[in-house]
Image (cartoon, rainbow, N blue to C red; front, side):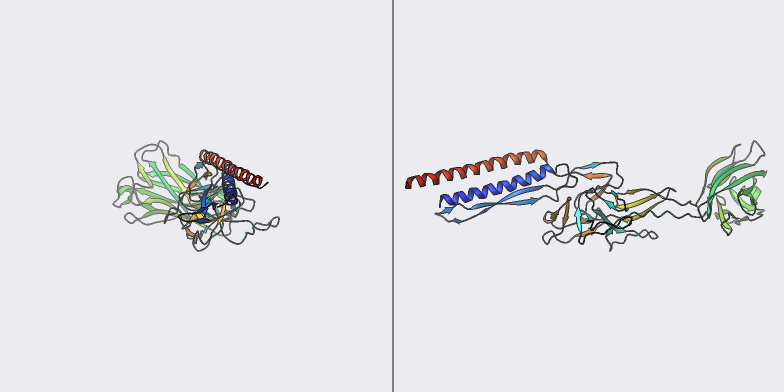
Length: 440
């Protein structure tokens, strides 16, 4: 037992409270930092000697208490590629390495895997999805043909600016009602744009003329056909009387009289009622197109019911022009979707959620990032919302989990404790001075 021991203990108290103050300062400074995880402080008593009859002053040491698993508030925003995790887990990210060569479409990344809750992802100049500190989001690449994610590969997600290829029209679908008693003998015309193999649009016109009750002739015309605009005709017969087949009145019973490049399907109960024609659109080969009119005997597709006007409810085709990338978005399942100017979309990657047995033991890194440690356990990469992994919230950020009110309380306590320890140092100094004066 000595004044020097008490002095050492008080100095250790000063150091411990200074460490606590440093953690509080870190928390307050990052109270608005997206994805930041706060640090608490715990204190541990170190003994010098303690028995039933003697106790000598020891010391105290401050240890950081990482609160990586504590959820921050999730707020919505207008960024379609921004993500937040509700629940446990982290985003896997790659940290940029050396400066990328000017004009290069790829980047280099540091070795090792990083993890973060900062989901402020957006495209950088090279198409990578990076957060506001520059870390690139990792995901499972998706096969464009099968749509399946390769869960054995976790790579930085890069949005390629490759255009969506054009698709030549092969099928047209008509849904309409021809009037049983038209007011005019003039043909009824409907048009649709189709596409050749290069994605160039061409107009196809269907001209319907009533030949007799329940019988209509359709003429198929392609104005910019390089051989002939008139591609052919056929007669569509409705009901049992005109067709001779057992179908309901107003439904297609037969297709006859096909001419030119037009061919027609034969009657079979509930079978497809189709017309096929060829068009020479300047691509070097004739393009085959099938016009679906519904089914024989069905009220879906083309019908002829009572009325005096043509009722067109749908005339579509399956061709597409070439499309450029127009936007990128994400889904709650973690799908990264590229949207094209031609109305198509394609999933290019899936974002998993990475969990740890002890997330509070992760090693902090710059930029709200972490790396795995022995104490944290191995990273478990899994689809969002499975096996305890958190769910994804799109167009959202997770704010810092710092509670300012609590930090102010801790600040007052740390200040008072520090001040009290300085009093101990001052008193010990006075006591030593008094002892020295005794010897004088």
